[in-house]
Image (cartoon, rainbow, N blue to C red; front, side, top):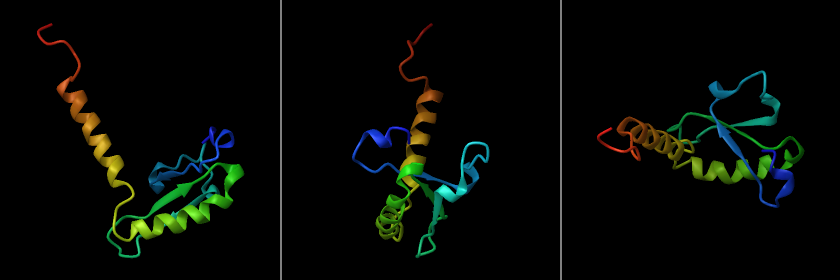
Length: 96
């Protein structure tokens, strides 16, 4: 988020409520988005504290996508792939 003041493109953090750490996160700086279809778990979105006004525009855009697609699914796929790479020790020399 700290890079946001240096660029012209909005940056958004998407996370689950359980990922909020009260020591470092401030819930008022996050907005809850629910899937109108009810297919997906709600998520929170956050923006840089100096760009809170961008959150509503981003929420509206994401809500349209969230009706049909999970916002967390791509990140779950990445996490699964990284776990598989770690378990398979991809990139390590074999036979040692």
